[in-house]
Length: 251
Length: 248
Image (cartoon, each protein chain N blue to C red):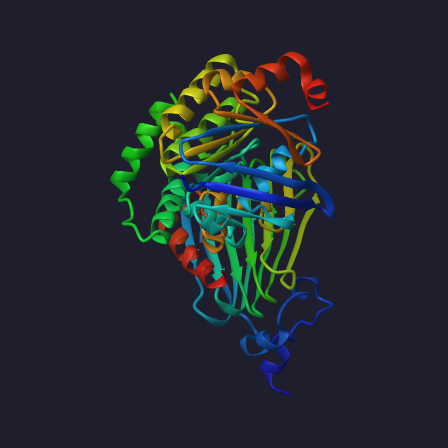
């Protein structure tokens, strides 16, 4: 029997004292791709933020085990070093800090935390260049300040480049498909497959729509409503949702 | 009564606006502060970088720029128990003045930059950028007056003043002031006091940067704005970074 990579058990969480997650349970094994779908306000983004450890997202019950460790006991940067990557729905702009500077520091901070050798400047640039090429992103863009002046689609592609550089074990991708045109959607989808579709890795896609799932075929689809997973199934469930809507399927 | 007693100006008190936030006890032994004059001849340019040593420091510069002269002043006001840099500038026609200053303080340090920039004749430009990072119970002050004389048309003056408070107990004071007696002038001033963007910090941490490293990266970029374009930009940024490390 495989050991789960992520195991969420009866997770409860509040934001500004308002209960959002109300008993969410989910198990993800290595090699699997899961999709969480659900209507607005169901708790999709909250799920991502709680797992990433964002301040203000308070866990009030339940447990989360990631790669054998108590995820909730870790600081956000420790979660990253343990192999968790959170792709943001709205990547944050950071003026004056370039992608290459920040990503090299971040990659090396992770390596130090894991007791691995740091990347030299040359090694890092080689890695960054390869990942940028995979996402068809001009390397010069990575020399610019983090996300500043990037279009919505460029920000999402830059998230995938970061994922490629940081090489996580589990990627939680919050609406990576929103704000993408058709070409960018395909490029991001192919990037996710190239980086994450491995026997030892897993992905949790958080999305509203079926369209990303055409490129990144999930093994499991879950419907999140009212802070809990109310239905799980295979890829066909996403098509049923797209056809019939959340209300009909959730009923 | 001795001549010195008559001539030496009295130590200012808090009613004097330019000394409202000063550490008067620290200032007393330094008083009176000698005025250091700098004159730049027509069409010439000059530059100066001030990085005061530790302890208590008070400086007063009086800079006169003749027609078309340029002067670039950079200040790293950090690590002083009390650090006061006062600068008076007079600009003749078409002269250009740049001030880029960073004030980095922790503990109970008192740091202040007090400027008076007089555009005496037409077509002169001045640009002031002040960035403060304050932790603990430190205070950082910028008092900056831009005075545009009658007839000094075409003046272009800007003041950009921002302060970042790392602790709620730290204090930033900023008072940009304009006195304009000419038409057709451009005087821009912006002023903001805030805390590090929590979303940005979480974003950087979610990629694996420990909190102190994430803060340092953001503050480094913030402070660097004061040194953009300086002749010794890289070394100033390095020294500022070393001073930031102490605050984190």
